[in-house]
Amino acid sequence: MEQSLKNLEQEGLKAIHGCTSIETLREVELEYFGRKDGKLTNIMKGLKDLSNEEKPKIGQLSNAVKGVLEKALAAKLQAFENEKLQKELSSDFFDTTIPGKARTVGHIHPIAQVQEEVERIFSQMGFAVMDGPEIESEYYNFEGLNIPADHPARDMQDTFFVAGKNDEKYGRMVLRTHTSPVQVRTMEKYGAPLRVIVPGRVFRYEATDASHDSTFNQVEGLLIDKDISLSHLKGVMAEFLTRLFGKPVKVRFRPGYFPFVEPGVELDFSCLLCAGKGCRVCKHSGWVEFMGAGMVHENVLKAGGIDSKKYQGWAFGFGLTRLVMMRYGIDDIRLLTSGELRFLRQF
Ligand code: PHE
Image (cartoon, rainbow, N blue to C red; front, top):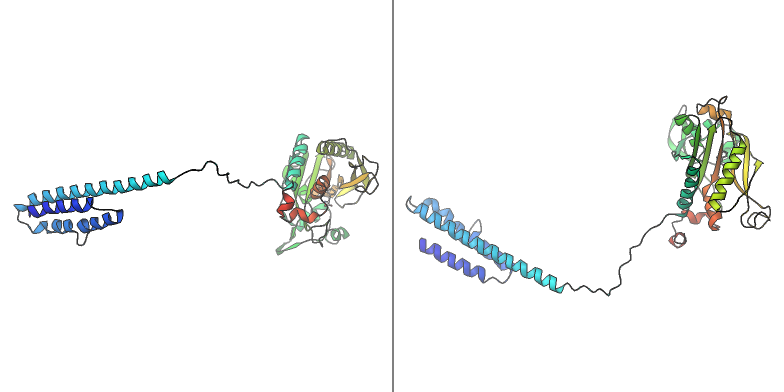
């Protein structure tokens, strides 16, 4: 018994050292240590049948043989792995003359670029930047803005209605047709005094062409305080446009109509291209139509929970998309939402 164990040890060591690959090493491991029919395993299993005298001696010896073989297996495995690593390292030639792989980096969309500038300038003038939902209730989009259900002004804006609930107070849900609903939301939330702008996407159910798209961006403005008049609006807008364009800009009012303001105005600015002399861009008038505005209607202040005896203010809304088109000389609005990279990469 003792002798056969010693022979097994010699035989095992020889087999291990003779291995030429990890695979053959695994086979040898199985041959000796395999759970079912391993040579050493079988001896260990047979220990229990030995006499009490032999048991401790043979037990100790077989443990020793097991240890020796295990150690030899581990050492051989390590040797194979080192060899493999060595091979990989020496073949890993790095050619420093190959040109680098450039990563494609995205950039900010032209509308977002101009929006950031608008936000920066109004922030400098003490306006906060507000947000509102794009899916809006009829109440905030129309009723709260003094546009009742049967008012002809509703025809001015063709609306996308969203299927679903029809609330008694808030009505149906729509894709907001302008950023003005955030006027009432802001008044409800913060009360007076107030100074905010609201940039955001708006939606109209319209046929699209070079100057109309179903989705575009507006910027709403709202200022509520004591003793506010339209002259404050004129000053703020002249300053805003002058900072935006980096040269002196003049503004003028014309009468305009929106149900949520009284009086209502349209604001034009002096054409930058011809300095007011008249050109194709300003249709030879020297002025460019820019936005609707006016003193916030009493009913709108009421909807926002503001005491119109104490406070008044103005609101405006301009097309951010149109401003971007003017700024970069883009003649088709649809390009801005097309996702066309050949177009977008120019900005
Ligand atoms: N909401 C109006 C529009 O979309 C613009 C506007 C805003 C007019 C605020 C007056 C006051 O045309």
